[in-house]
View: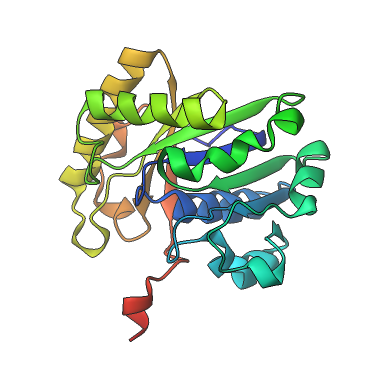
Length: 227
């Protein structure tokens, strides 16, 4: 089952949910399928896992990557490159916006409201069962409401990214999927896809899932892994 999503796609969620890893993998896998893909890094909150860290492999694939100006590359300030507005005004077949975590991280989207309201936008909430505040349906709904209020954009779809990095087992993926099923029932939103690492895929019973599965290859490495 292929992921069928095009146009402007905003990846959001709570802090540490794995948004940037999903953004870069969705960009890479979509490009490998022959799509025209662009990605903009709007994550001005998280100093470790940002899509800009994967710029070299993405550009080698032919993905256009839009970043803040070099002098602002490591700034935690709401600074937008003019190129981001241009990206929205002239989107490619798939244009991914990697937003920051929680309601604070998505406030930058409100600055793009005039551009975004002229387009069809898909905003996907990434849910990792094993991160704080999203282990229950109620917690996921609270995060959803806060993100929508700060960004001034409605969430249109859900993504399960249940993982404990190197300690992930199939049961974690199943449990995360079940939670997102419950969130989907509570909100009426579609589960756009779930994720699983390339090492985990052979261990999974794929018949359990009634949605596409995005294979994750770790393109973003935390700094403590490089020590």
